[in-house]
Amino acid sequence: MTAATPQPTAITSFVDLLSLDEIDKGLFRGWCHAGAPLRAFGGQVAAQALVAAGRTVAEGRLVHSLHGYFMRPGDPRRPLVYEVDSLRDGGSYSTRRVTAIQRGEAVFTLSASFKRPEESPDRQAVMPDLPGPENLPDPYAAWAAGGPENYWGSTGRLTLDMRIVPRDLPGQPPELPGVPQQYVWLKSAQKLPADEPLMHVCALAYLSDLTLASTAALHLQLPRAERKEPSRISLASLDHAMWFHRPFRADEWLLFAQRSPSSSDGRGLAQGEFYTRDGQLVASVVQEALIREHPHPAP
Image (cartoon, rainbow, N blue to C red; front, side, top):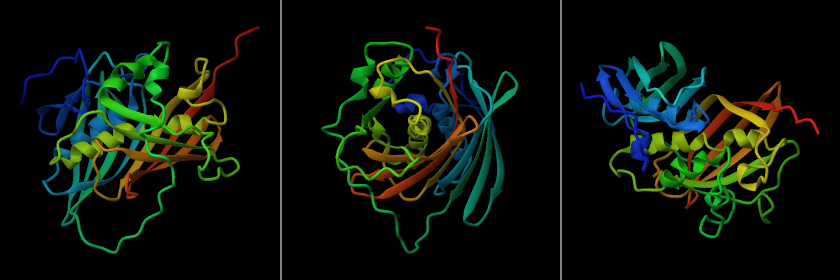
């Protein structure tokens, strides 16, 4: 058992974001930063749950899928405890279930599957032909002025790099009727350990939750980087699923191609794929998000 780590006073890297204490066999503890005022960022909760699961799996088995449900908003002022159940260890696959607990209540549940790599025939979708990140605007510059959504200007600026492809940029794939789309380049701001594939997968789980919900709400408001006024939409992740197809590094630029085929009943569905710079499809994501409009203020 290791000594308890206090609440971090500063987060400067993805290693900090994914740090967990092992407090007993199958029990881990971590801290999550806010994604909105007094609400722990769901992507970090999911990433830490995956770290906890991965620490209980035999070396050489890599995560290939995860399915998570967000049940309660986590409090960033208190630690989260991750309880890991080892459901199965077969000849090729291992399955884990993780429950994130805070003040005696389940906040998030995760099922994750790990497998031994094997050879098989390969095929994949073609990456959209879009400009690279180098000449795209840095969204942090627009957020630096502050405001209610400026939490990205502190933790985000130090830990991740982001470039958003402007929606009016010519040459993008045609947008289908009723299916808004968004393209974002993402990566860790610092190098991650080359010999720890779990670190890169967990970092991508964190990154995958940054813009999916906003993609599902594009029929109601512009993305954060393009808006001039505060959001009038409540967004929250309800569930999150990922499949990891090929090896990758989360500290190298990845294109996140996203679209939303449906929004109704206060819920929106978003889908996305991550591609490397050379066009390798490395992961797919699906998320359902809560979407509610705030009442407009009286004139």
